[in-house]
Image (cartoon, rainbow, N blue to C red; front, side):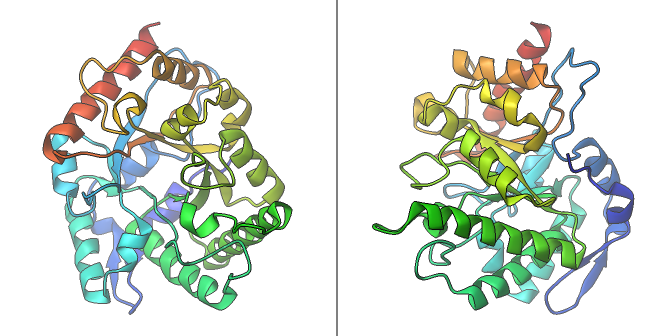
Length: 320
């Protein structure tokens, strides 16, 4: 299991692609947030209660980075913007984003939406030069923002073309993950990549947590781990007991209400499936992060309501 190098990372600086820097020591509460949100931390000695940290991940029409002040006000513990969204920012706007994060009481601890759909990692159209350049620039920005986990879902980038060998595609995924992991090691970044299984409607490869785990194990790289999205697990009918098997590779979770169109959970949200998930998280001693990643027509209402709903699930699991 990879542990966060908190002391080392607390001395690092925010850095933009143009070389501008911002000392992380100037950012209040950074050290505290990183210590309490260590990668997939587990308590194997006393899993008597379930203690999670909650954030909001980029999805739909809202931008958690732009709304980081709101997230702090509502009681969220961190923010999870999309890598693709951040990569659209010019250097000047990125510096503004860094300053906004530094001024907030919460931090960017995870990022999703790693690759744009047209940057293929499987099939005949893999452009290694463009891919390596994107990895260099995107991982530098993730590190500058302070992210510890980057989610590799990116269904458009990893979908296997019709007629292409799935066995070869599987090996291409391993190659890509090793290249990304090596870039992280070479640059001495603190981030890890979490493979996220996606439902078949979004990708035709790596559709279950079990498959994400097998891919991570076969890739055999210290910077490659697993993210579990409860929405995709439920969509594919995967038995939540798999969490016990893959627990040592899990670094992060995503959640949305699968019974109501992939929305934020609401008051009264009490799905037996999700109660089972949370009970297993308690049983395996998970002490990490869980992000809400959902559709909404009213972010200002649904996000804080979702936080209240998952906190109640967490409390109920602790009292069982």
